[in-house]
Image 1 (tube, rainbow, N blue to C red):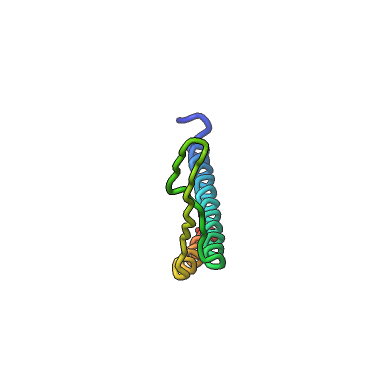
Image 2: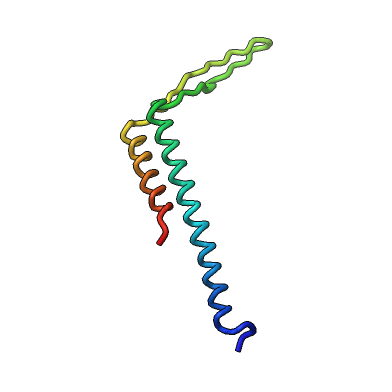
Length: 97
């Protein structure tokens, strides 16, 4: 027989499974919250813009730089989908089996 008896080995396995399940549920909750926050940010901002340098010319002491403003738009359906998916993941992560 193993030291501690068969009941003890089963409780160790049960505790490690419980710890894994708890960590997994916490990860699901965090993922759900992140999806909701990103979805809300995308919905209310509609996108973001940035400036990039496209060409540079240096002639002696003169330097010419052309900057272009680029914008990235988020479709509203994508933002709403992220919010809904985040809510589903959050609820699923909060339930205990």
